[in-house]
Amino acid sequence: MKTNNVKIFLLPAFLLLILIACHKDKTTPDVTVNDSDPFSTFFPGEVKPAPSATCFNGAYYRKIVSSTDKWLGINGRVVLPTIIFDPARTNPAKPGQYLDNPSVYLGGNMGAQETDIGLTWEVIKDEKGNVSPDRKAFRPFLRRTSQKSGQTAAYLNAPASSPYYWYPGEEVMMSIQIVADKKIKFIVEGAGKRYETDFDCDGYSLNGSGEFKRVNAIDQVSNEGKPVQNTKTRVENAVWKETNLYRMYQDKVVSVPMHSKRLTDMRCPDPRYFKIVATAEDQKKGAETISINGSGY
Image: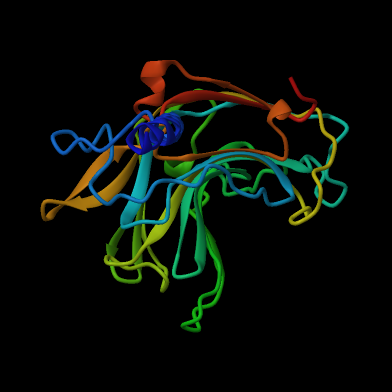
């Protein structure tokens, strides 16, 4: 009788263990480590991304961001979006310009130093050297915050010259990569044009841990840290054909897909302002089509 009682007691306990195991299976990522193909799955020991992240006020932006791990940078290929400005949102301090400003960029955070590096809608110079009163093209920019080393914050633009102007509908490849301790290389090229420069960032190192991001935004003039301002501005059909992260693997730097299990998905300040289209195949390679509408969808 004692033996039977023990069996009766163990049966529910065994079922409980099965239920716990099933629950764990349901929360395990669909993509698991595959030593034969860590590029499309995960590398052994790779840190998984956070399920969510807090939005920063001041802009409408679509951001994907990696885990904090031994990444060395990020790259992506994108067709630049179409822009439709809200005519009621003109900038009183700069006639001809708007209080909304589109940008498409990469960036990261390492050593408590944030970077934003890519393309922003900017003024240009014509053939005679005259600066346009309105913003007319995407131009490269580089921004870093200050760092505990004493390095100060900085913001730089590529020269206002036609080889560095890109326009809606043009396809570009952008990349930022740590090439030495405290140094990032930025390259943007496409439509027969190319810009390349090194950018000193004391927080970034070849052996450090950091996160890297890709962002499409409607930035708003003098609105950083504040709630977004109502706008009818639309920035539509930015087509990312791929997004990849750099990592050291088998003693060489490789470019690995930023697939849907390798990123945190952010749509700020609210998903209703975004239309994101991505097939299952797109999600394997960090591809998607992004539209942003300040009036919502």
